Length: 85
Image (cartoon, rainbow, N blue to C red):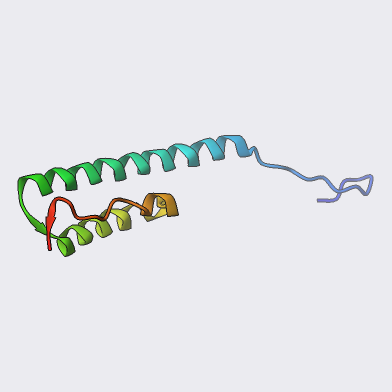
């Protein structure tokens, strides 16, 4: 926007509040993913599941929280120790 003196005036938004909000949203989603993985693990201890069934449950969990999933969160344990082949 031009000022009467001919100089431009820029309005810069406050990014600190937005960054804090985004970090809080990300942390909340990571917590939900961790809780979901614990529930899947508990379900595997109660009942035998195929590897495919567990993979689908993990996929749905990550799909629900895809905006918070990073490459580090995708590297979960896929050994299938509580599953049958």
